[in-house]
Length: 103
Image (cartoon, rainbow, N blue to C red; front, side):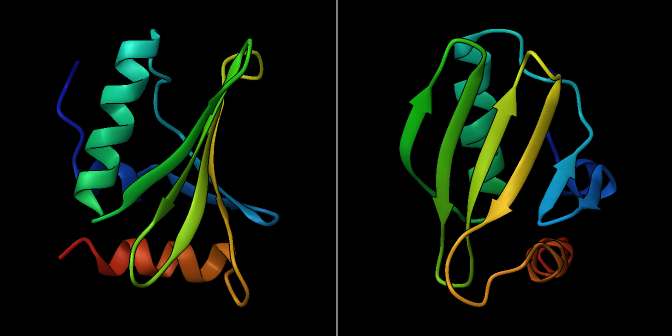
């Protein structure tokens, strides 16, 4: 698996309603999903909480001192996105925060 970078993530972001889509190839196995999540969390200084696996989906809560969100991966609809969590959190604020972390 190619090493994920902050630039890869920020270039792949797009807003869709209250969510922030990540237009990157989905991890193909549970192990690769866990590795992808750990890499993503490390890039943006997130701590991972409460992973939840379903038949064709994966969700995990990500949090740090600035933002909190839910990373969702659904293989059936071939999509990956972030949903902001918490009072005052929006997809726009989350996107802006991720862009600022680029530097």
